[in-house]
Amino acid sequence: MKSSIDLLFSKIRFEPGRKANITTFLNPYSYLFFRKNLTLFSSFETIYIDGIVLVYLLRLAGIKTDRKSFDMTSIAPKVFDECISKDKTVYIIGSKEVAINKFVKILSNSFPRLNIIGHRNGYFNSESEREKALMNIIKINPNVVVVGMGTPYQEKFLVDLKQMGWMGDGYTCGGFIHQTTVEINYYPKFFDNFNLRWVYRIIDEPKLFKRYFFNYPQSICLFIFDFLKYKISQK
Image (cartoon, rainbow, N blue to C red; front, side, top):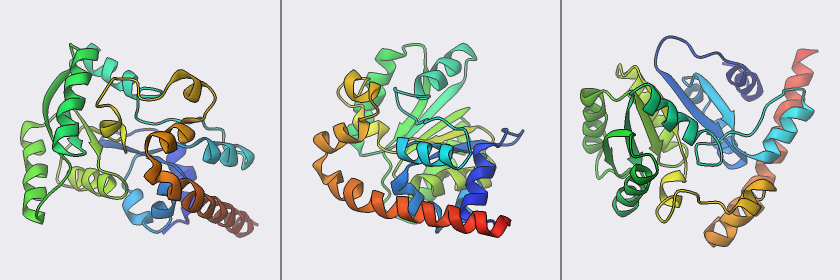
C-alpha cells in the first residue's frame, strides 16, 4: 500500500478513466481520516484539495494545485451546468430530511433545467436500509450522484455504489446540503474572496470550533510529518 503522500499525489494528478469516476475532497479535518483509510480512498479516481492551508502546504511541497470544493464557490455550479448542457440526470443524498428537501427546492429554483431524478436523507436505521438506498440508486441509474454525509461515511457510500456496478460520476459534498437550505450562496462574498470561509463557518456553526482549533493543527502537523517521511523515503 502506498503512503498517504504517495496516494494523495497520485490522485491529484490522476486523469479520469472510463469506469465510474468518483471524486472526493480533502481538508485538514478529513486528512485525519484519509491517512488511516488509504484503502478506501484509493478507490477514488480523483481527490481535490478543499482547504487553503493544505493547498499552500502542497505548493511548498512542489505540487501545483488549487482549492476545489463541491459548493457554489467552486465546482458545484460547473457540474450542474454540465449536467444541464449534456442532459445528465442527478441524484442527491445526504443531511437530514428537512434539510435535503429545502436544498433540492433551492437548487431547482437556481437551476430550473437540472434533472434531479431522486433524493433522500443520509441517515439509515439499519444496514439493510442503507443497502436498499444503494440498490435504488443503481436501479434508477443517475448519471451523477452527490453525497453529503460527512467523512468517512460519504466516501464509503460512493465506493460501495461503484463496487456494486454503478458507472456514473460521483461527488462527495460534505456540508454543502445543510448549508444550502436558505439560499444558494452560503458564503458571503467577503469571506469567500479572502479565503476566510472557515471563519464564517465558525460564526455560523460554533460547534466547529474544536475542529478548526484542535483537529486542524493536529492534521497539519501530521501532514508535515507524512511529507518529511515521504521525502526521506525517496532518497
